[in-house]
Image (cartoon, rainbow over all chains, first blue to last red):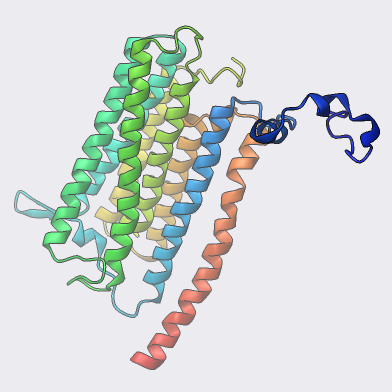
Length: 236
Length: 104
């Protein structure tokens, strides 16, 4: 490390490490990656965590924006408990669909955690099966969300207005749940790709099944975001 | 097992957390079902939300077993969002008061 960071100005005798370093783009990559390792995890896991950190800011900003428009409107905010009620057996049950969606997503997190455990025990079939079950729960969630969107659109909710109250309700709802649904959809595809690789035995040679854990991180994050949306948008 | 090769924890632990998350979700749903209002409602909603988030991050995402360097790098920056929330609360209050003065 000392030789490679020596000042270049003493160029009458270039440091050995610098002379051996590659030029151009390869040089740029090797220079920027030559620093000391700060995180004692694989680069894949560290990068997934940094991606999730950036995603936290995206959803955090969405939810803060929602808070701002809800707190600043002088028109009454539509009551989510009534807007998202389902008519079952002659009675309106508040937030029924949302509650089911919450339980489905939590269950998918549970099966994902178990898939990670199986993968590290090199139990390929069970790991892949549990990942496919997780993806199926995720898909079920997206289907229910599509149903919910259709129901609200039929009732006249639009991003610029709705018959129940404050006009900002629609834009906040479609933006936040839409972006989250997009993440779930992407996660389903991601999980299926990794499950296929597990089944095919791609990780058998190295015996390194960390890609399953990394996919799990993404999936649990999607569940985590839903916890916040459920509390702050639907229950507030 | 060391953290550099992966996180391995018993399935029974995951199942317990799964159960806890179910219970907490049910409780937060009941807050709405029984029409709790005002500070009791908001307090309970936020408490259950933070407990669920903590369980997911700590156990399912294995943060409880990661090294402190990674934990700090990931969990501290989102606190900046609290500053944003604080600023936007002031901004929203101001907008609300202005709208009440000029449009009502």
